[in-house]
Length: 448
Ligand code: AMP
Image 1 (cartoon, rainbow, N blue to C red):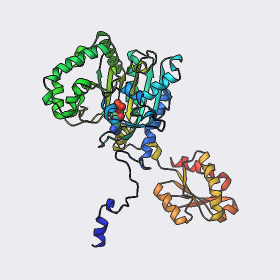
Image 2: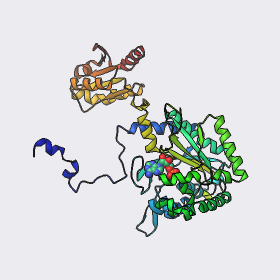
Image 3: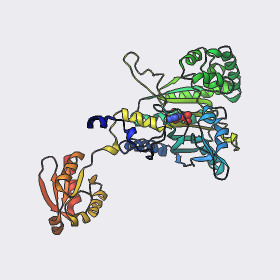
């Protein structure tokens, strides 16, 4: 075998069986992608802080019962996707498949109904679902969950949708809201029996999963992605025609608010969400794609980046007081993916202004201090303390695209001076060490 051929062999064959690999459906967030995560977090946090939301962090592990009761025993998530195990004390525990259940539990645990209502919360963190891994679908992924507890009015629904849209807009993402209303429990039950009736006679046309869904998870028949099921869903009776009067009024009011705040939305009767606890408003946030013929028209097959709605029964289901609630969960891997594709220049990846180069042992010892002086005076400075050759450091500085390099060598240290090198023309100037920040700031201002 030639050398070249050897190198062509897939890496897998060479890897020792003892080398641990990444679990299927799990991923590492590498340093070149993490600035995008930070950007999403920064943008979302600023908006949520401004609108009076407070951060909450709840455990990853909760009693299994919490998710069974909130999400629903017959949903896909609970029946086949949970990471559930017995802990050493013999209790059944589950790694959260979403964050809302834990927040609702915390709302009860800490008596948050005694605080001024509404209580507005948000939380970032990982969730776990034993899903079939594919593009945009992982077994560990991250969500941003935003919730309002204790506000039954349509303005709360609109606020959640408006803020979801605002976060995307500020990130430079072109999205659209798809929205539906699921009515109250009674009108939903009534509609579900009408839907069951419709699907029973067409059972043989459904995919295997949907055949099972007819009795226990009927609404999900409407958002199955299989072609044959999608065709059937088009003929199915629509929930919107069976809404109770109050839900209808609520829905109209939500839409009016959205019109007023210029949030782009589209009514979509197939949005039912995969969790049992929703009532009234249900929505998804999907990437909008513009094509030549139909400007701004939505691509139906696009994966949603977030979804939410109203869940007035949730707190009560797990033993709390009757509490209205509405919220949204973003899938952050999908948001980050969209952000990366949008080629947006991130604030966190902007070019630094100054590079600090140090020559020799004594100068290196002093360089942390000088670095702090520059950093504390608001200069965007970088260094590489493990290199001490000037040529190498200038190359690094050049690659970073800084405007000036500050050079601190043995001689300068003794003289209490430093050299400022203009990276564009290579001109160097000696200045007093004590005045370095002011000198740099003066020069940087001129450059801008
Ligand atoms: P859900 O909690 O099912 O309403 O999902 C909320 C959001 O989480 C979705 O809109 C997706 O963006 C994201 N999401 C759901 N399942 C996955 C998954 N398996 N992998 C990555 N993101 C997901």
